[in-house]
Amino acid sequence: MEWQDLLADGYGRVPEFMENVLSGLNQDDLNWQPRQDCNSIGWLFWHLTRQQDAQIAALMGEEQLWVRDGWHAKFNRDADAGDSGFGHTPEQLAAFKSPDAPTLLDYQRAVAERSKQYFGTLSKADLDRELNEPWFQPPPTVGVRLVSIMEDSMVHAGQAAYIRGLRQGKGWQKY
Image (cartoon, rainbow, N blue to C red; front, top):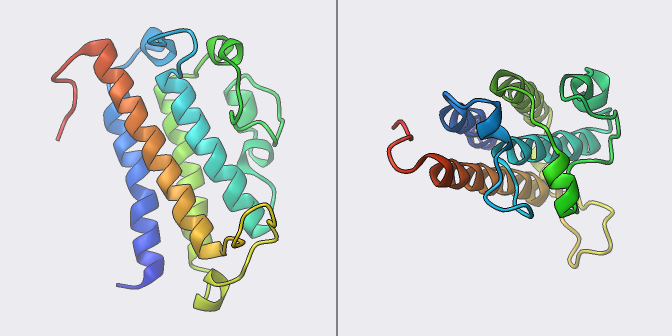
């Protein structure tokens, strides 16, 4: 197995996991917050996909799918490429209204597919290229960034599963 296949497999697991977590949820479930200052399932899946879209687009030197393909309109949000949810206040979390589960999944699948295509363009030397981000020491490489994007996605997907468990109790997860 090649390293590109490993990345594609890891990134491809996110929409599969999302599909399980989102199965059977309605709008109230997607927007439910355990507390007002907590994330909702819909917000978490929007955020993890937004951060992946934004960071992969930056690595590619291309426009985000959020803007280019009009995903912002499907989420009833502005085409603000800088808004991925990072730093949202409790008020912004509470105001977030999730689209339906199919829209969340379709956006994630589009971003995952673009990521997979990007992996196929990379060489081993590309992975070792340092990013111009002097606020990190040592500066991250493309390879380090790709792993951190996947880690962030997995963490937020797990948080969404936890919130679903809080909302619905035991027994919701399919194996």
